[in-house]
Image: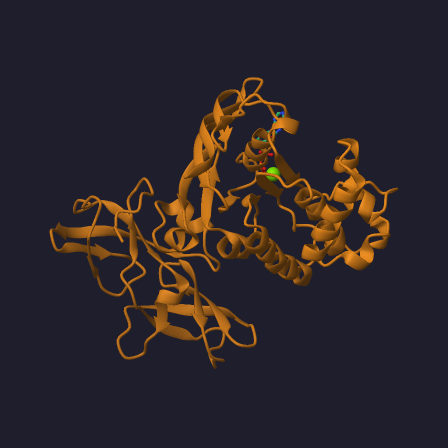
Length: 362
Ligand SMILES: Nc1ncnc2c1ncn2[C@@H]1O[C@H](COP(=O)(O)OP(=O)(O)OP(=O)(O)O)[C@@H](O)[C@H]1O
Ligand SMILES: [Mg+2]
């Protein structure tokens, strides 16, 4: 059942429309991640859900109640920001308890709720410290603690981990997943981090220029991107894109010629729409579907550099028509810069039309 409903919402700053009609639904307990390029309206959407920003058109409801124009305090949502926004002169305990103290929650209950949040976040030994005596990760935990004690209907996170170093980020990502599992709350989470989006989300919303490009589970978006934009945005290393032309097209599939490939490729359907012979298309290959194949190569690429990551290697190469691609190799490899790699692909490529729409159905 829908718990959060964002319905045809727009946001206008003066004459500038930055959110252009967005509809998103989330069920109770769902973890929804917003991704998209800088300036696409992610923070603005969160701020509209929180009531920190007026909604220009459309409606926002939580738990069946229309809250489009409600006061932030009446929405029962809690927002956690990238800058922790802690009070420097207050102890960790008081930072977490502050909202409840203002609302005259009985002392015993405040104590119990802070203790519970501190247990979940493993910050019990830090309650008497001031923010400046904490590490970045500990400060972020306090900021999350302040949200937890409010028992919000929805948690809103705006890039909460982007101030942390790589190791701490990974650790906090796992912590957030555990918190979500333990308290089962609905969470809306904005991030630029591919791994955070893929691992935390029940569903990912890909935004561009104030519009939704696609909504789906991480695997959905990875396996079946609706268009070139989503294909390029989700997945790291990126999808390899080869431009080509449809040579022939029949009910059984299409034949595509690409300057990068040594011979035309037959690609079986099903297709949403069969592209006509002569029309330009772009073939898309996820890195793990490209393999080194000396016996039966379909194309070749010259190695530019290799990145040895210890357990695996990334090979950066360029095809004969100049298309850059990345080939992951599971084991350590003897491939060197300047080598020519014989390549093949192990699954049918995606086929994008001239407008970037993915024509091949799953
Ligand atoms: N108060 C404001 N007045 C005018 N324009 C604004 C205001 N706040 C945001 N904008 C504009 O709205 C657009 C969306 O901003 P928003 O902060 O939602 O982007 P974002 O997706 O969160 O980007 P980032 O990934 O960089 O945080 C941007 O073009 C921004 O400049
Ligand atoms: Mg933002």
